[in-house]
Image (cartoon, rainbow, N blue to C red; front, side, top):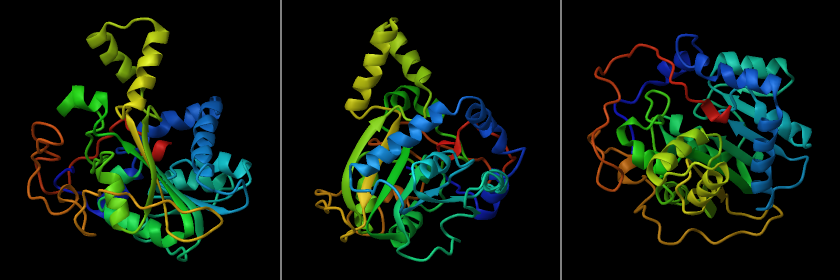
Length: 315
């Protein structure tokens, strides 16, 4: 599922570096990090733990965070002993990260000159939905990983409770921030069609605003007690209805970790991607994905720059 029209690369580079565009929406994250970094540390360690259980070494190996924004994940991964590298489209946030002694390049996967087979793990934490070409970006992730290297991809969950209830007004439908949407079937299928070995997928609250779940749970189930709400949100995650979808996959090969079997029953027919990620002709949502129509913009030309309030790459 995707928005039409897609913006150009040049437009996105301007948007993500502009005070009239994206930056105001993530400034609050930077302030939170400076005043109370522990929450961001917990998020980083949670991601590293998910990767370690699939064979990522405890320290020393190079990892890449694509769409690293201010570099919060890199900051804590570096403290854990990893050789950290970042890639970020915003010239402002990538410069801020470099000022704090982080190796962050300004750009995107389509322009990077990293050598193939460089990284033991690549993370894209709430980033792939921002891409104008997810297939191209995942192909590049595959290329940059060492044999046996791991990919951690987190995206807004199209099948979450919040997405289903809020429908057209789901705040993750925010052109030009979010351009593509995925489910627990389509994202693993896209990755396996490109050669990845599927390891696991799950949903969680992630970096989303839990108050959106609470709002619906109070309204629909009349839950009010904090513990009841927390238990219900945990249950949503277990049932694949959490706000964030995570897929972990491996590049085939032996790099000190055992390989998993490829995902069976892929809904992809070939490596060109599924219908919802290719040249589908209209912005109309099909019955399997939702209802209604999505108009990304009334004009084919450049729309005005507007901040969305959504966080890029989890930062």
